[in-house]
Picture 1 (cartoon, rainbow, N blue to C red):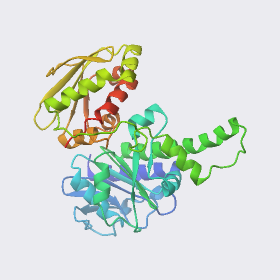
Picture 2 (picture 1 turned 135 degrees about the vertical axis):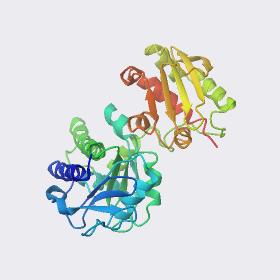
Picture 3 (picture 1 turned 90 degrees about the vertical axis):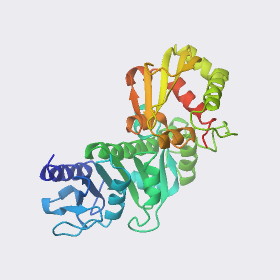
Length: 348
């Protein structure tokens, strides 16, 4: 795609954000990578719903405009994201209404519907104390775990392999928060309670109850750290899975008979688990297992240390899944339990 075509895509996404009510006035900004050294970014003070070609500027990785115009005040955040994530091709930043409202009083959000859980996972927020992002380190740190992060008192940032997929994350989060808000209303009506809007305290309680993997809610408490994919860690995973009553019940109920292997990207080392009705009956290095999940060391560490959900990491391409995603989805419940148990074997 040449620069002009990419510029047209930025304008198209700006209009889409506007039409979907995800941006208003002159807020928000969009960027797209041109090559290793340059990117396109919206100009300062522009309305994303009515962008003109001259309002989408070419800048270098230092944020300097190549040509004329004044780049968005968030150019530092955009350029730092591209530096830290060479595979990322697009960044979208908005001040979406429901997203901003929710994160004014909450620190994280976990969707309730299955599809949204796959694509969003737990969306965390970071403190924002300036009108524009001046400290980019917390932003890039969170984006290592999830392709979307909320900036409290400010907005939301999403990254992706293209502009549309970054847009979809922002849209999905906004819609999930609308649904969450409305569900509180209908719950009150069903219970015969006054059909008023929920208070901040009620929304906080609902949000915490909706996050079963939060450190304060989950009864599984790590007591020891292991070397990543060491023999000791693998043995402990097997012991936990086979001793867990909930896992055994789910495995039998769903007839979980499959081979699951994990691969450390840097070394190519493979560690496989063969399941029979949810029990691990064999381990090894079977590269031909039905499902193979590959990721780099930092992502695997985040998984075992309860910082990222493997399903989310797969849909966001932080992890690569070889195998039929639709088929493994039927084992969503037992696989989710496995991933919960993995957090009992955190890594050093």
